Length: 402
Image (tube, rainbow, N blue to C red; front, side, top):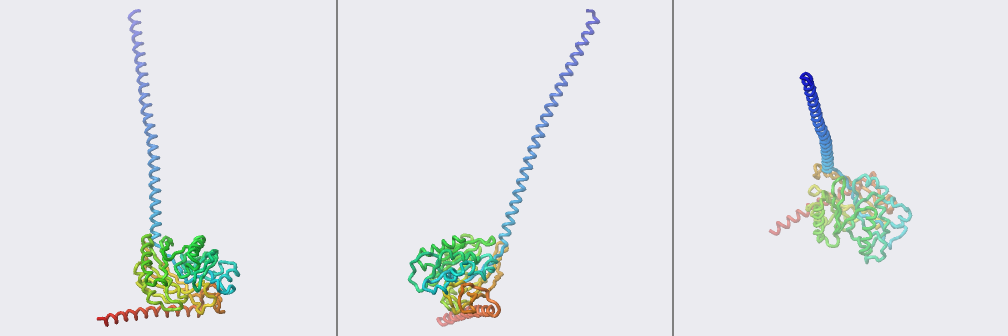
């Protein structure tokens, strides 16, 4: 091979080397680009996942903020609330076994065969309020052993349906007919009421019911046995209700003297004590007639609501009664001092004009309505006069003792 050929071969090898070198560089660049692309892809995927996670987290945080806002609104609404209670007097849904059957409550129940008959004329009132309270005077039991007393009242447990049909939600059981057929008759009565969803309370049994988001505490005190000796139990019950978070406390009393329209000193002392210790409303019954209403420290005391759906007498001389209503208003969680009340004069019998009790209370109209309102006003003024006289008398005695 001559020199020329050798030179030619050399150039070919150099060219091939350069081509191989370029190929290696291209492959290297492609590898680099591929690696970079892969990294970019990973970064993009990672960014996408991160974005999804961030979006999901943001959505969860927004949901939490929404739920918190809803809870805050619910709490605000709970702090701003208003509700109306209706209160009526003695309800004896039964009879004494010695009473005349035909004219008695049981005879009427068997004749009409309709639990809704008894509260038919006042149902719309109780249906429109937020809470109805009555005094349940008697037992719902099948017990046969009667207490040794002049009058003892009982009815079949199914009579509890009268209350639910009439939209009565709560009953007081602290009275002188609670145990008319023994201890079991008392527990039977509670069981019958429970079966109908009716809340009962009284003596050592208090109750709290939520009304329009407000916790309403209920207690019942029987005064006739111990008189002022029942005061401590009443105070303890109020304290217990406060500790359970009651925002409104309604204290009922079975007290006073039968057929007396003016409360006695014990009634007045216990009523004032109840309010002094935290009650927001005091309701009374037992006299079987109406008594006055007093406002004490901005709170109402209804000394006697009278009879209502009363199976204890087929022909009482006084058939006047009432439904007392009060509206409680809360603003920012505080009970307001607006003291909105309403008195609905009633008769205990829709057959009152004929002089007999058909056990169907009815709102009074016209002159009858005005006459009942006048009586309540008269008795209310008498309470004020009595207290003023008592205060003056106490003052005179104090001066004399000096």
